[in-house]
Image 1 (cartoon, rainbow, N blue to C red):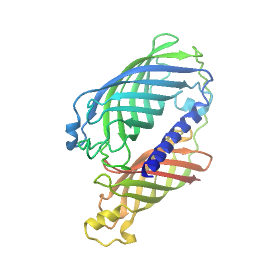
Image 2: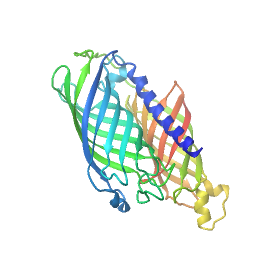
Image 3: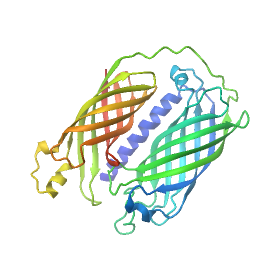
Image 4: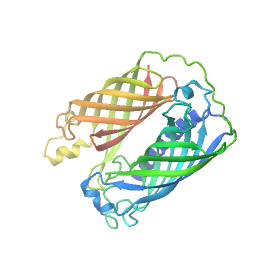
Length: 368
């Protein structure tokens, strides 16, 4: 049952990411796409001192991208300088076949242009979130030294600065440098996660329209307005040592944003959570478990990057009520939200305490 629940959660993550990308890509010209094949190399970063035994060689592998090009037929495409939307399949040898094995991943992404359209060579920021399968996770008998990854199935995040250099009407050169991250959000321990720095180089071929005509219309100014969101979330986490009980957490948050532009919102909010995992900390310290000891309440400042219906929130918060202070007073949040309808929000976020991931939050909300 636990494995089924874990896979169900990760399937939801992938489907939300894929659905949001496909929904946005529906605005792209029909029968117009690019296939790009790229080689990759790099290294895993030992972001904890007790991970150094896992780093034994360079990463190497490849990536196949299926890319939708946008032409400005929708206002959001022009606002974001005609971004590319795509799906990537990636294979990486992790440089340690005995303890890490290989990584096989698939993730939808957005490729957002950063420089002026008049430049022939485009500079882009690639943002991707999906799933990966790691062949050699932790096993208490056969692979007990792998303290980075505790499960086969993990979330996969890719952040890359890349360039596209046209070689002809059909061919292009793709090159970039970036960071990737794989973890399961503490659904299964150990979960230090894998951070990977990599470079990529390859070629792409455009099918369909070779001379994509970009539409340029007058874009209305963004409404400067207050946006309110009420979101309910829940999460599951496993504490160390591996194989122990999983605990649920529940939360309710109120977010208040001010719309600065089509792309950016800033604001803050308040939230409260009920964390069953604190029971174990209380028992370890011989403290009586009471409902009040399991409640946390905090305030936060927030930023959100918006791309049509998709938003990437970042929170920096402080617990004003946390009786035992096991994880410190500060919390942080990253992730994504998708506006399914005018008011309904789908939420997948990761709450952390500085560099330590706590758990994934899955939820729905209402936007006013």
